[in-house]
Length: 498
Image (cartoon, rainbow, N blue to C red; front, side, top):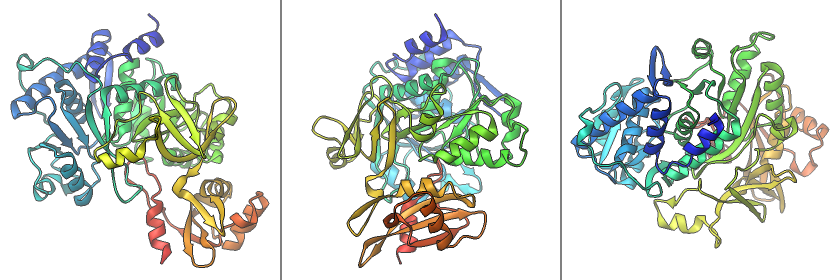
């Protein structure tokens, strides 16, 4: 059976554990996880996860037990997550950079009976934090995992449609939500991503973002479907990570728009010499992609760039494909996969399909999130082209209303990215007693900029006069979250509204 057919067949697995077992039988000796000088095969991943599952069961973890874990991107973290899937526990991954407020919220809302932590990691004592918060069942899982005889295990879960995952929205708004997923919804998302990217068993991937992000499980599903390995980065920084990319012959990398910009900045230090010789594809999502960044990456790095649209509620909605046109790759978020229905209502993108979450921990939030036909309201604005590609134009809450006229922040941001002195930009609306809101551009710049410089540039680019920024703030760095480096606009509004 051809590899693509094999991947499609594996994608029909009912549960994550079934997918792990099937891949282990097909290619037990093929590498799955690479980290530093460690190499774990698909067969070893299955075996270690079963032993860990037995160790967890001996600790009292049962099918349906809620287990929160706050761990860095390590081989042990993946093994623990797979072990919990073998048991049929409910997992609540927590980003390792979160502290008292976010961690306490996640533990309380999920009612976690167990909490896996890394001990002291990067100078912070996570175990002490867990005890201060009154967490139950605290255990350390950085470089050692519970271990016991798998013969003591109960049968693996048979249903892939029970809620077994509680993910937390990324923190670009002040109040996180507990998002409910099933094994099937996550397998569907990962399968769609893998098929869109045209990956093969000969690829070498990389996970340079927190595995606790929903993209981590998405990526694991891709590895299991196509049988290729990924390099894990416990912490990620450039140029330090480049040696690892080169040593392992990474062919596909990325994470989000911020990752593309970081790679491009390094490439510009050595023009004409390929940054990672084996790299053929940068891919990611999670934040808007300026068209100018796409063209610069392709032109200067000599690789393809495919960008997609996803969210914690639906990890894969649309994805650019390497065989798309440059126009579509630069200016759209790609096409939806088979089984993902997109409906645009009053400009808002709405979704229905197997990869869509089951709702939220808070029933009131669930009730308000879906329309009468069962479509998830995303809060994103956009439209579908004649070719079926999705173009996002902004957020419902990211429309600036100035004197009764709607202004898309994203439209202004995309034009600002064309300015040679602008490294990154965020456009926000600030309260104004006469206009309702006024347009404020916050930029990272490589040279001195004034409001007059910026507005003159935007006029030349054809921006309507009523959309021009009335305030300019130049910053060293835009505030971002710790997962996919999304810009936190609410922090900018808080800072400059005063």
